[in-house]
Image 1 (cartoon, rainbow, N blue to C red):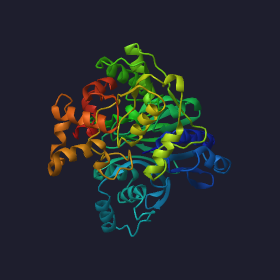
Image 2 (image 1 turned 30 degrees about the vertical axis):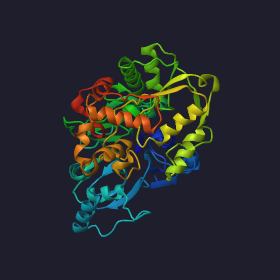
Image 3 (image 1 turned 90 degrees about the vertical axis):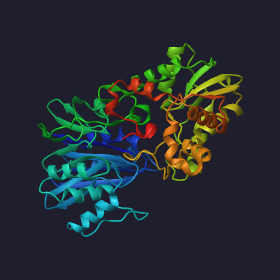
Image 4 (image 1 turned 45 degrees about the vertical axis):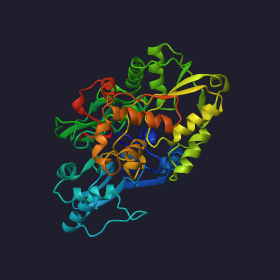
Length: 468
């Protein structure tokens, strides 16, 4: 995944750019970058943030970089922003998204005049560099952005900085957000997350629609390409990836999670001693459940964060599992001889949640009931880089379906999406057994959609039901 932040200011923008980008650190773990434009032209800094926070790596850059225009990003994949010189002029670019047809688009770029692409480690091509090459095939930046929106299979949201201002462009179906903030008498910012600019003195000004393109300068914002009606914003932004203080399409993440937990409780019939959330994203769902059920909310384990990195930062799965285990410190009086109901945002591979459950049993828990805040994940996301999964078989659901259906597993996945079906029930029971839960009940898709509260046709639910 990734996030970006840009500033167009009448003053030096670097401090705002630094903090606004840092506020997106929950969206990426591998690379951070900032690029500015000022009296000395374009300047840029990119660092590896796998073993240190963005803030630590970029503190010295704040003293060096100068300019009134700037863009920054957090990324799980390619180094960015990139500085580009072309027939459209010089510009800096950063992107959030996923390109499924990258090989096809690279070949097309070769045919239309691109001579080479820089190769990243592992032999892959920087997707942001490809996007820049595609833009440069057209006669203007706006035409180029529109072209990318049309030809990319997946999604592509962009932030581009020229010497005059910033272009913000939301992806074709609005799967990821783009927000504009305004600071009175100083300028504007462009942000993936709207909370990122609130403490910097900006107020909500505008939210881009699907495919919309705006041009932002220190003096104002111009709409240069109108939004489209059809939207498929990613529901997982509310369930997991969005920061609690963020709001998308008028729906706050934290309050949505309360509603999500409330609806989980409404369908449940177990009576545990305590309700808890897996830190951090599961906590708000658990608060909602506890409020609705009347069962006390507690923290039977505490996440140790002062020195431990995020659980999915290491590239090796066993290392990720170890870090996840080491971060959770038990609170014995809240675990021993207690029946616990635990809410996590989702179950992907199941490895970490199984280890968490075993850890609770070893710490004296009598029962561990699991309530994921979303339905079973059955399809890998083709639109956003939400995980490093290389195959649908990384999903525990798909492995169980393969065991049950053999060669016909892929064509029968759809039979397991209906929560009232026998196949769904038996898959649920097998997951519960393999992961050693006392009981397992997933959130229903219809309830989850109601928890968000916007029109179902505007939400992407592909990873749960396979519907594009």
